[in-house]
Length: 375
Image 1: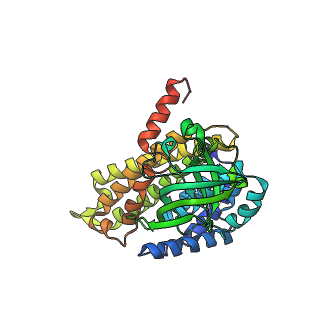
Image 2: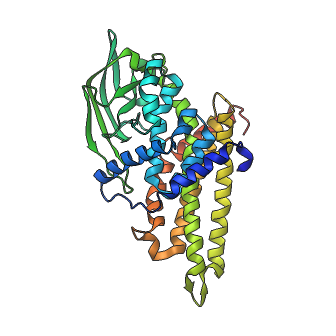
Image 3: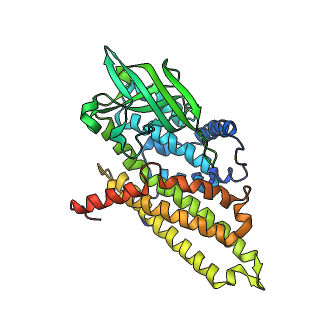
């Protein structure tokens, strides 16, 4: 992976690893309320240690290095970093000067928490099917609808919200808005509980009025903005998968060296060696795809759809297999809630779903290849 990095990324990697090292001793939050408090604390710590800086710099390789380090130490910390990027990057790409002035510095300092409100009960992978409406009313827009499975719902300071301004135009009628959390008509409905601690929940927009100046870019360009954002951040999901896979491999190797069964260490059992070899090989391949995609994005490419889709698809699927193999090698201890690989097992599954399911990535890749794109 070093072939895809620039000299300055060595410092990024060291800084991310140093911060991540402080997280390993932190216990997993036992409740949803505790996870919400912990997420805010983690964000403040990241801001204090300048961990969020790669987001502001739109340095995708540095973002990948950061997510890989965070995910290996704390899946919750990785999620906090990821969602901060999802909330802030649309403002960096299409926000006006006033929005940047209000949200950029506090977000990077860990003082303002962002969120990305796109998913709805009937619109997940099919983004064009969203039903939340934004109707122009003078110098404002009035939003009505609901969102669910929204990370940081109920704890964010602002939401990047996608809503339809022209229902007849499908995806071309979607616009994006920045909605501060204290806006009248925006309501946190309820939390949604995951098996791995994470602040997730439902939002309702009920006559929620926001100034037209809070629109990100032109009317009807929200769908394209969402795709541009996900294009760049999708590779970082693969990086998080690499971090979880690397931690799982680390734990499996350590256990295999000291655990004896049938008169010898597990490390000398050939079937265990086969698993370890496969885990390491898939992790290496995943990293190469991830950092290739990030390098292309850093090179200024308008779209990195193919590279990012390949990276996310392979890395997340590989990480699922790696973590599962680690649990199998470690055995009964690996399914105890206190063990790191159990936490990884509960956390890694979501990576194959959010920011585009594995099935959608297959369709994206095949579609681009059939249209003549060179892999």
